[in-house]
Length: 114
Length: 114
Image 1 (cartoon, each protein chain N blue to C red):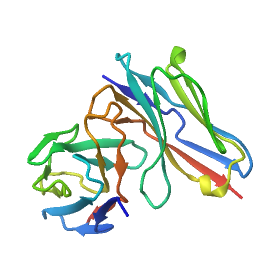
Image 2 (cartoon, each protein chain N blue to C red):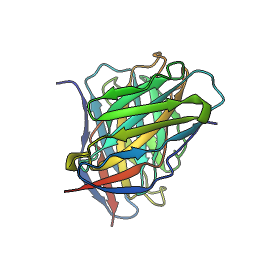
Image 3 (cartoon, rainbow over the protein chains, first blue to last red):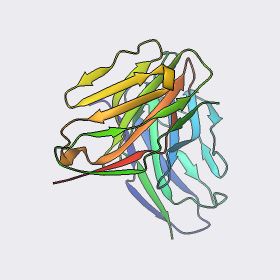
Image 4 (cartoon, one colour):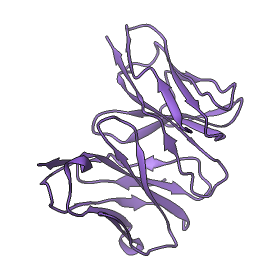
């Protein structure tokens, strides 16, 4: 089955630690995205990548880093510089170049900082 | 800058009632795309519909219907004869032509009581 997988589903981190969230897709999509969701708010874009070895900051990139070494994978690292990292993180992918940018989402990772 | 407003934070209905979710958007582009996504308690966003700015025909899919009105910049969503399984957060989103970015509204939480 084609889709997007995110792991782990739940993640706990101590303050001051970096943590990496996994996102893998087998949809053969070129573009991938990371969003953050906080209660009562819509999704906010952290980073996106339209092709391998290239990525751009979204609206709230501070305290986060990404890499895109393979088409299928777009891991997100939440660094200790992110002041309020507790949130729900969603990964998405799409086919760039299409006029409407329909995005497909993974099941999400819920990160809690203890 | 594009913007999506979902003024209703929460809606609670009894099963079989109809429920309408409002979505108002802002964009300077003449070509753009509007989306509705459903987020059940599991967390994954499920695509419901995409509409382009040149197609103002209303659409019906089973118990779901959408009313797109460019004159009022609105793209409202109605669930007819609601069911408990419709309980979820619903997001409206906007994408401008050939843009990577999806701008999301804050979401409306729908609770359907048996």
